[in-house]
Amino acid sequence: MGTLPMALRGITSSRLVYGCMSLGGDASRGPISRADVRDAEAAIDAALSIGITMFDHADVYRRGRAEEVFGRILRARRSLREDLTIQSKCGVRLDEGGVAVQYDLSKTWVLTAVDGILRRLGIDRLDVLLLHRPDPLMRAEEVADALTTLSRAGKVRFFGVSNMSGAQMRELQRHLPEPLVACQLEMSLGKRDWVERELAVNDPGPVSSFPEGTLQYCQEHRVQLQAWAPLARGRYSGVTFDEPTEAQSRTSDLVSALADSRGTSREAIVLGWLIKHPAGIQPVIGTVDPARIQACADSVRQAELMSRADWYALLTAARGSDPP
Image: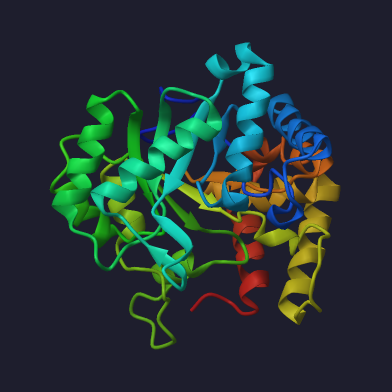
């Protein structure tokens, strides 16, 4: 589990990804401040300190400020770029045409969005571009044309998707000359519908909303699964925003007990549970707290040490009931 088992091997050795969605401060506060840059640099350095070299962006994160502040740091530390794998996403448009949110995977928008990403980051080429959300108006041939144009222009090295099903990837892949390398989905001990889909076979209980066959498609076609919100927004590691349910409290207690018995952090246990799955999931951690980032350092080792009984105990606690 120390190396990536899927298509991103060779692009990065980073078993964890740092998600930059919270970098850049509040978009409503005006220009990026020195404090915004310092906070971003502290988070980036914390990620680097635990061996993370892959950084995940999107053009809409903080309305472009996340990429902009990252670009400022790259310009100030020019030697840093060669050590990093930089991934970003496009396809979401905000507050345009009287619509708060719309998805746009037209060729014109994808090409325009990538130029904006490169400009804000201050780089010539993205290592990976993900299509951020499925666009119901998408024409697969047009998307393929856009991606081919970007590849030939040397602006993007590899392509993937985010929040798409196996069926949607299959349709898109039919028109692409090169394989999609990554699919990013919300996956965690708290967001378990991807596991529930596997458990639901021949079970009369409620069927998971997770698109059927997506895990299998990614495994068969060597598409790297990336998990956003893999720490379940801190639900089991001491960061609470709402009153926990009984199942959440029991799971938090079990996570703490396992962490204490192994001399590790709660974050490492939560991520270790995810990494243990044979699909080779690559967590994308999004906290900006340097201490919490560093608390994730032991997660790969904890996945290797985690027994089947421990894995199922965590699953059962989080579900609030035994598997069917």
